[in-house]
Length: 212
Image (cartoon, rainbow, N blue to C red; front, side, top):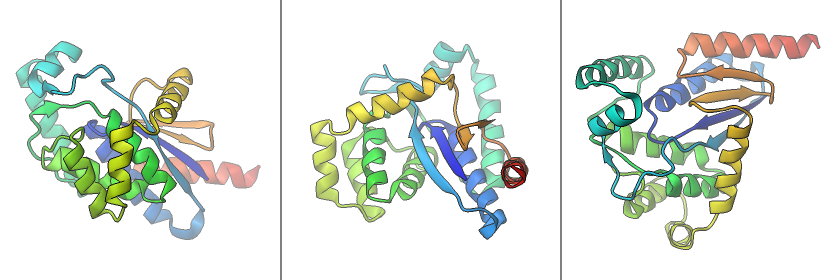
């Protein structure tokens, strides 16, 4: 089973969705062999380097009030707790393009999931800036990647074309919100679903494939 997980680092539902998907796969055990590919998506490709205050951002982009933001954050924390993900205070939204470039390289090194988890925790749990090169380099080292090679990637703009091509590919297929989970290039599961929803959907897809 091939699974493409399309997401952005600063998307809270992506943090919930990845954790829930991984737990669903753990429940299925050896019943199905899975190739999980992390795919880039930029919620805010035009976000400037200095980022934007979160409260201003949700008003500008979604028209949400401060009260609605607070209610949404309570829901997000609750859903995060259900899958063991801790949401801390997040004050700003940042550009994530360099994080996606580093994730692309980490995938070539077989460490993309480890780096993705580290990035999600850095931003959503500790409120760190996922566009800051010092943060990215520290996380790369923490997950066992070559820090000096990571430094070259970030300084050179390497893998920019590859990330843009993949992000454009998913947009052209109609993916405009994340997380989006595409199974075997055919089945779409949208949003940060509960573990049980992911598990049921994956079992149904696996059974359909077996019957075919």
